[in-house]
Image (cartoon, rainbow, N blue to C red):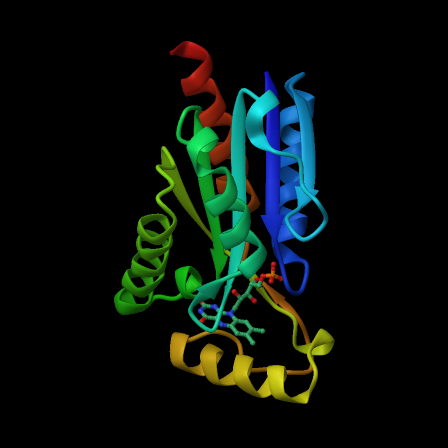
Length: 178
Ligand SMILES: Cc1cc2nc3c(=O)[nH]c(=O)nc-3n(C[C@H](O)[C@H](O)[C@H](O)COP(=O)(O)O)c2cc1C
């Protein structure tokens, strides 16, 4: 199948996840095109499947992903598509944090009118060593609230790669069977 992966990222974790998905799907002999939503991404017209992902910053998805989905929702709604949402809240043991991440994703789909067949929530990373002073401060506050790691001398990755692999293979195999 021809599969399009579009991602929106600030610090690169969503790009890393999108590239991991690309590798997995290529190993299964799919033809994959991957693009950053800020870099003139291709339209979904010529693809069988679209996977679109964005990280959450300050309770919002990347504006490039909002724009991409708004511009392409009519085509997206005519073919199988899935949304992968990357944030820190889903790495938390606190139930409220998960509810908040779900609500942000639901609101995004409602606002854009995109009828994604599946939403997959993926835990991202804390990259203290890459942040400027203010981002480090904000992220430490978020980590404290969510029960994440507050040791700012290191980066911390929470992405469950096996779960990401399961999600893409399962989503595509369901389409193939359909
Ligand atoms: C300034 C800042 C704000 C963030 N805001 C949120 C947030 O509101 N909710 C959340 O769950 N995670 C939040 N995060 C965590 C990011 O979603 C996480 O670091 C993710 O891996 C970033 O992905 P990216 O590198 O693809 O942008 C924030 C991170 C930063 C640096």
